[in-house]
Length: 164
Image 1: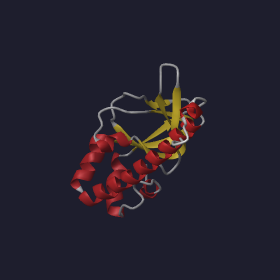
Image 2: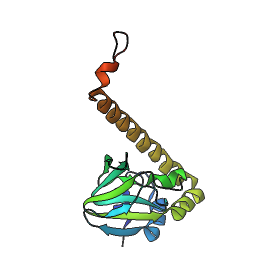
Image 3: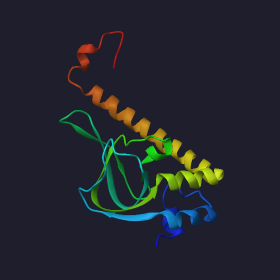
C-alpha cells in the first residue's frame, strides 16, 4: 500500500497537509515499468497524472517522421503527465521508461475532483504546476537557442547589425 510518506516525496504533493495527502492514498496506483516500456504516446488521451518513485522516464517529441527528440527526463520525486492539469485532451509527448521504474498514477478525473473539492489543495498543486512548467519552458528555450547557435547555416544569417 502506498503511504503518505511516499507520496510526500513528490514535488507536487510535498507541501500538502497530512489530511490532504490522506485523500491520495486510496486513489493512487503503483505501476512497475521496465526499460523501454512506453507509458503513453504522443496523441494518446491524457488520462493519468504520474509521479516517479524510482527509475527514470524520458519525455520525447516527434520532430519529423524520422526524428524523435528527448526533450526532458523525469527523476524520482518529479512528475509528468501535466496535460491532465491543463485539461488537455491528448498527450503532447511520449513518456518512455529508460530504466526499470516505479511510478504512481492518479486518474485525471479523480485528481481534478480532489482539487475541485479542496481548493487549498488545488491551489498548492496548480502553483507547483506553474513552477514546473516555467522551468521546462526555460530549459526548452535554452535547448532551442543552443541548437540554433550551432546550426551550420546560422552564421550566414548574421549581419553586422544582428547577431544570433
